[in-house]
Amino acid sequence: MSGIDAVVFDVGRVLVQWDMRRLFAQLIDDPQELEWFCTTVVTEKWHHQHDEGRALSELVAERKAEFPGHDHLIDAYATRFLETIPGNIPGSHEIVRELAASGMPLFAITNFASPFWREYRAQEPLFDLFGEIVVSGDEKIAKPDRRIFDLAAQRFGHAPSAMLFIDDNAANIEAAAALGWNVHHFQDAPTLRADLASRGLLA
View 1 (tube, rainbow, N blue to C red):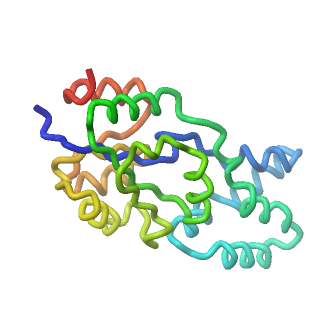
View 2: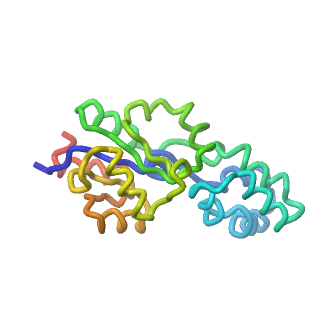
């Protein structure tokens, strides 16, 4: 027996694809300008502040002041975020459904800004299969901060040693493992499926 009685998923790049370039490639024709914009203006590091709970209006206003002349692109980040999520990770949703059908309790810990999460969650029924979902933007704590894992364990009602945490980010995996969680560093759905089967969690 694996000793695991709950499975905890990350969301972005585990269950759904996420790529901010998918949005801005529709708005910027020049490849060099697109590269500059995505590595200098609207970057994943900057976006992480929103995941940590900073207000969208504050972030957008600061960025517009820092990079004048790009208001329409920065506004697109705020108003068209769902276009950075082009689809699901192949095979991951099927794994979630199979685990749910087997009676396995499912939870999630996601670095996701509050307004973007509410918009995305409203149109994704897969999360009806989950119990508690800890959203960094709501808690104003983001992975890999250990406090979000401690909060999640309390909310989920299972000891870390009795849960399997699945995430694509190595820093998040290392943080969870250091706190006693079982972990799977996500690469793709077939590899995850094989790991779950080896633990006796999937047939």
